[in-house]
Length: 349
Image (cartoon, rainbow, N blue to C red; front, top):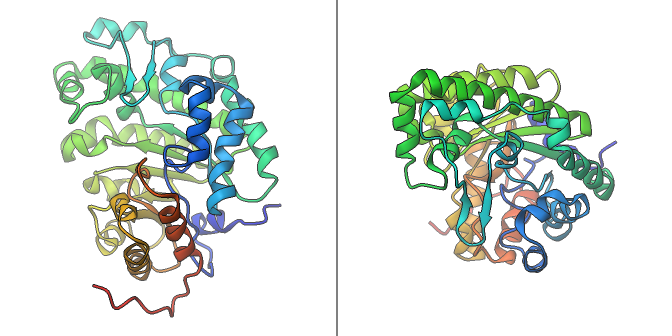
């Protein structure tokens, strides 16, 4: 039995004394302990070595006291399993030397046996659960089909993923065929994560906002709905469609237990869009953690006053920035954990 099950109770909408708190990208980047491992092992070695996965995943639990761990991995391991060559360039991000450029290229993207190709992830889950020793829940994750398609077509990160958007509109049949392959693989991958022992899963649609309302309805929403529908009988599902406020209402009926939101939407607006039967997660601007402890505390308290304690998980509106001081991350976590609904906000405006 978990010693701290706040996250799972919040996902079920049960009463909690305070919101649970964790941070996207909490396992790495800004932690000196992670940077020391980064100097010794390349990125995919860190992802593919169960003992390293367990150590890195547990770092923020050990050092910050967060209420949940999220598995250390990367969304692009799914593309590697599908036969795509992926390199991670330190300081520059992912690079795919053979992107999808024409409809015929979709045929070379295969649907894998995830147990054979991604077995190291499931071994990492086993090792992590042992190291966590029931302290907090473990969150599994995957990238959403649209976001994975963006990398497949651009071959790298992009300011707006224009090539990916153009491909979808020029070759809609090929785009949907590719999205279907990605969806099938993602569902199988997340189901195996659940079998390995994760307590819930999050689907990152990091580039959903670039599609706009019409594009989201065509190229993101149906596949997020398929994933949520397939996984929700197995475990709670969190969907994070960054920048896609226009998609929140539709996602509220997907079967997901929670929706993550970024800092560009207010708590009141998000709640009005999704209703009161689903949990919201977010949405502090990660840049606030670059300020000072008093400012962090003020904005965190204000955020929680606006969301309330029911159906809410405190988090950032995107991944923690690598230049964030550890003390500032800790201040955010502790402010949430010390929160009581009657607590007064700082007088600082």
